[in-house]
Each structure stands twice: as C-alpha cells, then as structure tokens.
Image 1: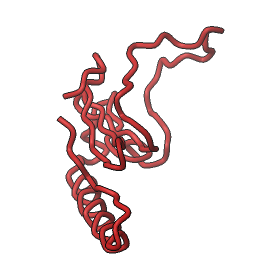
Image 2: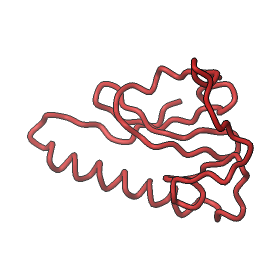
Image 3: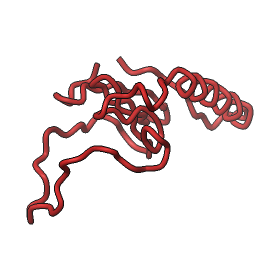
Length: 119
C-alpha cells in the first residue's frame, strides 16, 4: 500500500500547503534517519540511508564485476509503478525503500529487493 507524503494543488492556499507538505516531509525524513542502525550494525547487502552505510557513496562489498558484459549486467526485476520524480534508495533487511509521485501526490514505497514486488 502506498503511503501519501504530500498533495500538491493549485489553490490559493498552495504556498501554505507546500510549506506544510515540506514540513511533514522533513519530519518523516528526520525520523527515518534517526531510526537507522549505525553503520557497524548493517548487513553487507544493506544501503540503509542516503549515500550508503558510511554516507560517502562507496560500497564496501567485494567480489564485484571488474568489467561489465557488452549487454550489461543481468536484470533481476523492473519496477514500473513509482510514477514520476527523482528519489534516492535505501535498502535494509531485504527491502528497498524509495518515493514516487502520481497525479501530483507523492508516496513512499517499500519493495521486496529480491522479487521486485511491492510490500
């Protein structure tokens, strides 16, 4: 089930609505950041918050491909229902967390990282 984050509108109250939506987004974001485990307690496969376990955009995993096949790496799954927009990803405990937007409503998503199915 999608969790709405904010609802944009073109009403005369849109500036106040936008400010409230931004406030809610920041409160939720801060809560997510504060609830994350420390980098030392993270599984090797986890990317638990923005920019990775150490917030430096670097993975500590080993055994990664040194060269990619001409056709690219094999695609495990494709998720096409996130709508429009741009969002970072967080991966923890086999779940991928991100955001999407549909018809001017933003929502949070939780997807099974192995199957690509929405949770």
